[in-house]
Length: 495
Image (cartoon, rainbow, N blue to C red; front, side, top):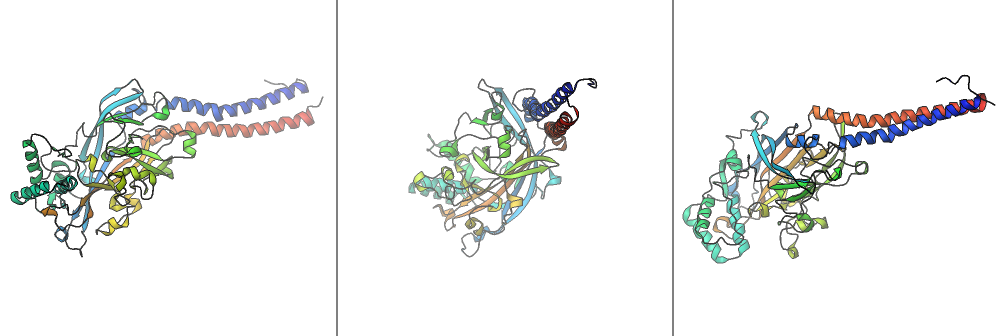
């Protein structure tokens, strides 16, 4: 529309109205357009059939792998020699593709979803650093140590004498190790364990199982036995769908129908945080100033708290990363809030030195302690008690990176080590054994976004940033237009 023949007053009005229009468009692209994009996109970030998050959760397009490293104990015969430390050689990784299948998923009226999870591991020999089927290792006899721990805790001399008689007269153990066993047996298939079989038979004859006695129903011993393709092992999950508020998406409500776990006190026993597969999108305030990230891990029967560690970039896609620090496996030594992780009576805590978590309560009473691999960030005494381990942050740190706007995991390196508490439990078979934490194996769960998913997320980021860029450009144009209009109004369009 031309205003060539308009009066000078009209020209002034039209020019300043144009300036107002430009600033109005800038405000729309700076605030309105991103809000529209956010509103449309976040409808896909809730758990309900048909949304992107739900479909990807049911059938993830991102491959997941689990690397297992086993520790081979090379000098177990020297365990009672105080001048010789136990030596270990790392074998692996044995790489498995991990597939999660959601079983019996059902939506509830309180904006939650209940489901079970079946994990399947498929061996990937071309990525492995050993032969899972033929490699052999020597590792602590976990069942023997479990029996010793139980006898020590029950503090009954008669029970101790009975166990010694059974062990000494029936040739049930060959020392304190599973010696030269196949890796596949000690992990998935089950290594022969005469002690476990004898105890199972003995309990079957008793009219009533003694309180506190719980044996795994396995034909042999294996750390991951009966877990591959099991829909029962990981338990029953109930988590928020985000249909009430997208800020709640993926947050755990109960596990095995309980809001707490019995193994830890207070906050440490609360079922909380995310399982890691689905996360709530971060708000603008959270993106500017990220807080801790809480991750619920079924293998630990608890949640852990990760510390924000800065920005993260994957193929130009920007995200945030959190890491496991020395607070994760503290027991009240350095962080008062972690005192509830101690499983001993409260007046005796802390018992363990920093860096180890007692998970015996959710592992059939076995004296298993979890740390970061190679005792990374643990008290130096654990590392100094053995040889062959060498902790390095880049290889042994627990890391979790996600895309802030969507909550999609970008890169995961979930690293945990399982250690057996070996000591003289008062049995003849453990006589003279020093009190030491011996590494058994460690795992790394790996996730890395594919380029296709990266492209999809970058498209959303581009739409959101395009509005802001357009707004800045329009503000610049508006300032120039205002200056021109002001100049003409004063010096050219005179009455």
